[in-house]
Image 1 (cartoon, chains in turn red, cyan, green):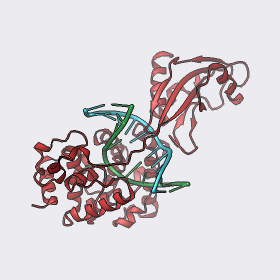
Image 2 (cartoon, chains in turn blue, brown, yellow):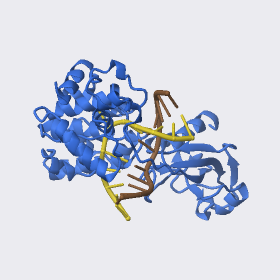
Image 3 (cartoon, chains in turn cyan, blue, orange):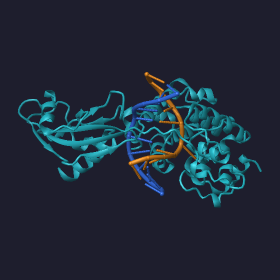
Image 4 (cartoon, helix red, strand yellow):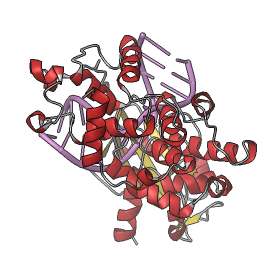
Length: 348
DNA sequence: AATGCGGGGGC
DNA sequence: GCCCCAGCATT
């Protein structure tokens, strides 16, 4: 029995019943694939259900505001996915007659759809024999065929795509693609895989050579940047506050946050006072009170954000003040959402 | 060819 | 603390 047959047999006996497994609706498959990019099934699943409940069709998603889409996406991370999702929904709805492209190339042209996602949709929805290569596939193939080429090198990416194409079952590409990914997620796991209990261990080359724990090989690149955030949380005489939308490139694009004073190094209270924009203070001398003495360290993949929040008590009225109850309508980073939560529990 | 982009969970 | 997760866009 060949590799693909073994994978498909294992899948038939072990697959999880996931909601996108019982459909070939391109909208639902596309939605699930975008959400699961660099995201575990357990984390993405509740978002998938939420989105389908709110937007049953691509037309519903197209008709929503970006703000609403980002709000529903809040907490899932990599927010460009949500922006591209919204953009592509409008394109499909308004320019493609509500129909998703049915070819690999057509799908690849959509924003937010790369090689992996185009292959996934094309194979699952339209039976196109295009192999998916995600983190699971890299791991399974590198072990089963004992390949130590770094999977994130240029040569590795090309090699594994070819290997994946040769290993797949072109007769049932959708089933096979889901099978190998599920096998990687459940059986051929990154750490401490249960090779003794694996039905493929007799033909797995890495297992024969005792190399399973050392594959796949990756070129590592971890450099964490430190940033220092001081958030000014205005409270005006009407108990209203202020949010601003992040427009610049970088983290959290298009999400909202309180007025931010950022610095390359840690600053003290007096320095911070000098950095408060006059536009914010208005008339009178505002009171500045720290909420957290100890910095909150918010960790992103490549950044550590050392953060303090300050209440800025204003004498007069904000022009665009937002009542505390209205804050929940705005898409905000988890760091801000957590703060708002504590604010409601303590300060008010 | 490299880099930036979130947040959560496992070990 | 480090690694990984149904990757993609940009430079």
